[in-house]
Amino acid sequence: MIIVAERLNSSRKAVFEALQEKDEYFLLDQALKQEQAGAHYIDFNSAALLDREIEILQWAIPLLQAQLNVPLSIDTPNPEAMEQALGICNKSRPLMNSLTGETKNIQTLLPLIREFKPKVIVLCLDDHGFPKTPDEAVSIAARMADLLQKEGLTTDDFYVDSLVRPAGVDWEAVPLFLKSIEAIKKNLPQVKTIAGISNVGFGLPHRRLLNRTLLALALQRGLDAALIDPLDPELQSELFAAEALLGKDPSFKNYLKFVRGQSPSRLT
Image (tube, rainbow, N blue to C red; front, side):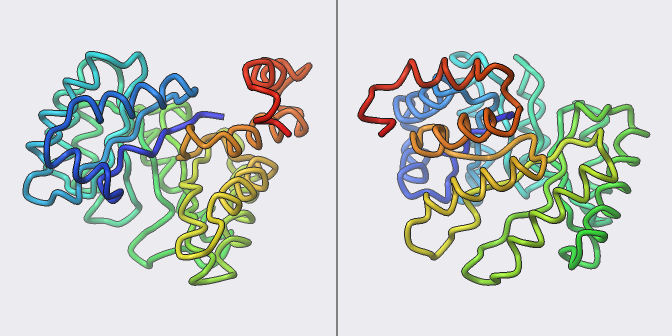
């Protein structure tokens, strides 16, 4: 499981305030804790700062790159901000979060992919909106996979996101998401999948319970990567246990290593 750590998102009040103040200690503390917890990418989003977004990216990215040993995931809907951010990600290959199948989005971001060659998160979303069936999700994923491979990317360079939507808004959204992962892995077995797991519980009580339950269900369907909070110990426990029981962790090697690193009280 590739973990994209989600905590440095300006939609969170504490992060927003820290970025406004350019609080270096907060930024690096959060990033390093997530790296130490096993993150493979640190997602960074300053979009909520609006007209200061690019300024914050130009301040934060060099700081993060100087301290981290893992790449950044650049999370912005603003093409200009994405271009500026990719241009200063010079330590390791970043992850673009994200490209969609919408014509305007492709026309805007494809030149950046050609120039900077990031890895890419691809959303199953096109000019017709969200897919309404697993077959529609497969169709979008296939078109985008073909497009990116024609640009020289391999299936190790991008992740397809079939989109987790809040279960409290549409109870049918989660079954559709899970069936879409399964369909993509069946029809496009080389394509890797990703999901923003924490979207599922928006507005509902015991949100972390929903997060870790969905993560286990999605792993069973073939999920390869996830945007999650790696500092959530219960979610981490669920991840290692699910991978072991699904045969993704031969001889329970990673599970046993994880358990040995925990205090007994954390695992009861």
